[in-house]
Length: 73
Image (cartoon, rainbow, N blue to C red):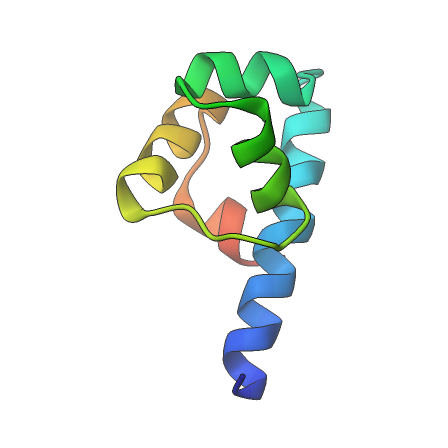
């Protein structure tokens, strides 16, 4: 994995968890709002899988954030 992609992914994983916690949401509750299994969401937060672009838009909507909030520190 190229260094830029690795850093981008690490930032995404870190920010996803931070932003969820800032909104006082559990993994279960955000997964329900996104209409996905909890295991899928947990895999995103743990960096095991990446959401598709459609799911990223859903995340932005559910958390009421801009893309920059999710992908940059």
